[in-house]
Image (tube, rainbow, N blue to C red; front, side):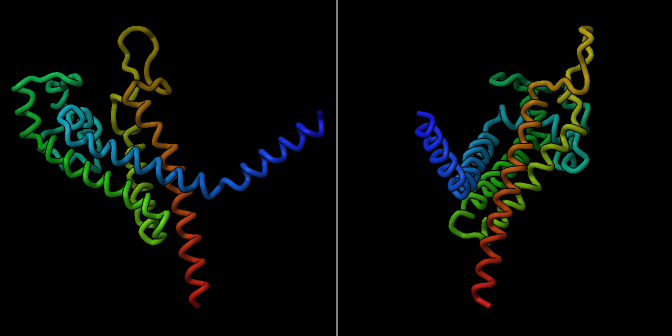
Length: 198
């Protein structure tokens, strides 16, 4: 019985050890699904309105908007809510226009990263862009006040207590790690082809 269990364990380990390439390709599929889905949501008003605090507070992105950072707080909408005055403020702020462009960029990055399964050079571009995108997203932990629980009297606030927005952002560490794995795999494939052709 002990020998059978050990053989089963060795078989499982052998399978797991041979699954690396499958795992790397599944990372690419995951990036495709996440980026195409999230990028597609950028064409919906509620999602465009939801990213305003991140963009408005970012010194790298706030120039896309016409209004300064604190002003957006007066025009926040809950998901699914509509207010005509607030909607027009978002139109004037370029909230929707920026979100549409960002959506196209995010979906493109997802597709390019996925294509690394078949075309390593294209995958290199996608993985590099995914790395840049996720680092940009993670920078919101520094620039966006809304990622930390505010001091509203409970005594529980600030670092390391993340709000829903902060919890959403911190998950990009996993995407960043996956993009680095995809980048490494694509670079290995490109280098291998270069060596074979030389």
